[in-house]
Every structure is written in structure tokens, then in C-alpha cells.
Length: 107
Length: 113
Image 1: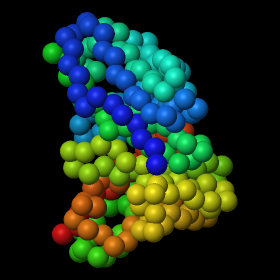
Image 2: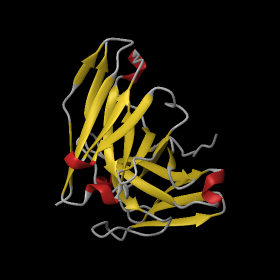
Image 3: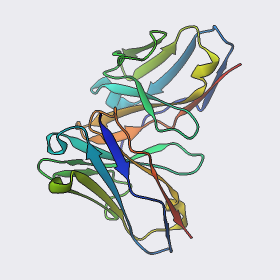
């Protein structure tokens, strides 16, 4: 059994930096991916392979990794970034798990 | 363009099974895999399982092992997720997603009542 742990909520003011952490033993060996989910929408990948940003994702989104913790950083958070954020990793490359999710409030 | 179109909403009785489909287009279906994810109302994402569309090989979350079956029909470019022994806690939105997680279906609401 393995798990990924995230803070349940985070609140920042517009323009501030938001840092969301995700911890789990599997992260020492496997890459993480971060998803953004807005109400009523399917999730969207904002970071993959710990630090890579898909095309079309603003460069204020970045990822980092250290040991068993990965961090999603939103530099200069905007109101439009208000959403739920989930980390994800996969032991054995196909046995996946999501973190519990972090509700980011920007106001 | 890549698309995954899922089957429509379902209402099931406790103890029944449900089978959700996910039709792929815009790419060679058998070249990749498909993930299935559950999201209960107001709750987080849960990885349920994955299928290799080429070989049919599957992986399931231990949480759903024994109740879930994922299959595919390469001739129809469609993946299926069947969940059995439904209970009220299974009421949720079920998503399929591409192997690289970049393309999701629209979600299928399954209500168990």
C-alpha cells in the first residue's frame, strides 16, 4: 500500500506565490504529475515528470522534487488559478495513485 | 483531434453492475493505454485501473480489485469499465483518460440508488 499526502487547502492573495506539496515514499523513485481541476471540468495536466510543463500551460506554473516530496509552485497566482490541484504518481509505471487534492483559493 | 466520448449517465440499484464505455478517436487506439478514474460528489480523484489497448493487459487499484473489469474492443476503438456489486458509495463521475493523461472523456455519472 502506498499513498500521496497533500494539504487539503491553501489560500493566497492575487500576485502571491502558492506552493502545494505532495509527499509519499513512491516519489523517491517515480515521477509525479500535477492536475488542475476547476468545477464541472475534467482535470488538466499542469506539470509532468516532476518539473515539465505541457505546452499551453502558463510559465507561472512550475514543479520541483526533493526526496519523497514534490512541490507545485504557482508564481504570481491569479484568480483564474483558483481550483483543486492533485498530484499523481504510478508505482510500477501502471499502478496509479492520486493525492487527496488541495483546494487553492486566490482572493 | 483526440477525443474520448463516454457513454451516458446510468442509474443502478445496489448490488447491480454498470458498464461504461469510452470511444477514442483522433489517434491509433491500440498504440496506447486508457486509464479509468472515479470522482465521488465533492470528493477527490481515485485511480481505478488501466488497460493496454494493444495487448489487453490490465492493472487495477487494490481498492477495486475483484469488482472491476476493464476491457477493450480495438475494432471499435473503445474501452470499457465494468464495476460490479454497486453500493451507494459508488455514486460518482467516472472518467476515462489517455495513457499520457492529456485527453479525458467528458465523464459518466453513475448513480446507485
